[in-house]
Image (cartoon, rainbow, N blue to C red; front, side, top):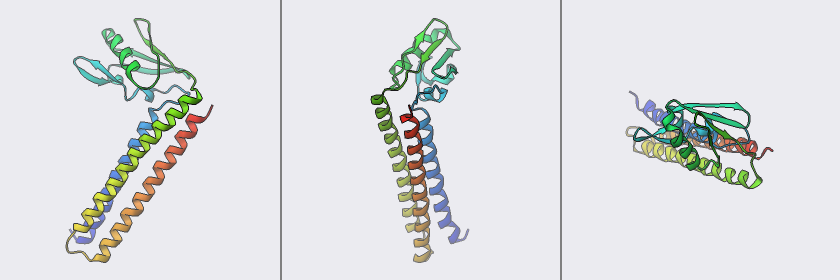
Length: 187
């Protein structure tokens, strides 16, 4: 392996980590509710089942039969109470209704206050993503500095590449924030 490719490997590795950070932010955004019902809303809900915590979608079928309604049909009816409890315990502000067969979760319209709270939640997720992107940059630059048998110019060039990738990824996070914010504030 030539020394030139090892510097590019550091840049490539940093880009992969940054891509993952941006994807994680977008995935977390999909769980923040807007006025519409979406099954992704319940993706982070964990249910106490069979002695461990399991994702909701692994204990039942989650559906959005109407724009303002989600339903959860546990495969094992004995889990109805646990599913209901998990949804109530999540900070999604949802009130499930259990009819002994299926759990219906009406999606209430968002109040102005609730919208602002959700925007804060988004900004928190975005900041975590930005931190992950910056961390990937710091890690890559320190690896580049430690690379041996490479001229200082090549190292500087690789550091510039990492910085550019970093800046591009921060812009992606910011764009995702703007889009999600607009979606939440839309009445």
